[in-house]
Length: 222
Image 1 (cartoon, rainbow, N blue to C red):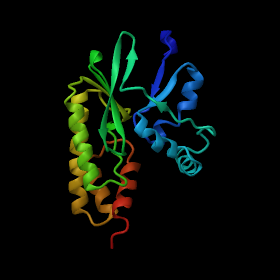
Image 2: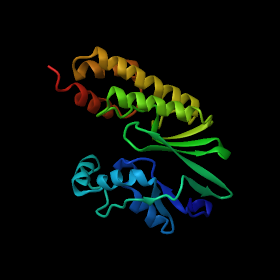
Image 3: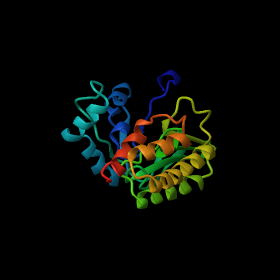
Image 4: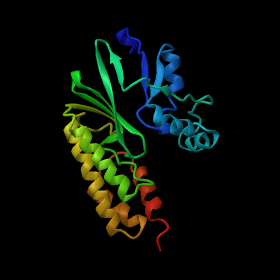
């Protein structure tokens, strides 16, 4: 943003996952006038993500890369964020890969910033999921589709993804959840689930998330 001569007034956090909020100190150092905000109901879960126990867990994912002074956002007043002469609207969509998921809709730009509600050609985070949470996630995708945006910025994007087309990403994310559900039902071991999903999706980024989900959901079966 500095290259465009602009300074953000807000930094909005879409959902309570550490990989989406632990970079706040760096962002605020670059833009000290910006206010980190989130919907009030999601902040307790975000504060939990920066407790010492969780910071130790996140440090295992990102060794030597995390701040020693994490920051939690404050509550956003209302559900809109001013952008020049327009506004972005924050839309709660329930549980996706975590509870308290939201998307940001900028109607004037036909744009959605989806957090983790929509993934762009990346394995989706199914660890800890249930039939109910996966159904909730599908409903969230339907809610995003109803916004009719042309462009969607996903929280997890394969660098090789061809574009940021909203309709393609929503359709692919919806299909991934359905295929995961079917593959999970047919699999009795983590290896079977991994093989089925890898065969169906050989080119998706971040296969680690598939492995974690497989061992979480099937690793204790005998």
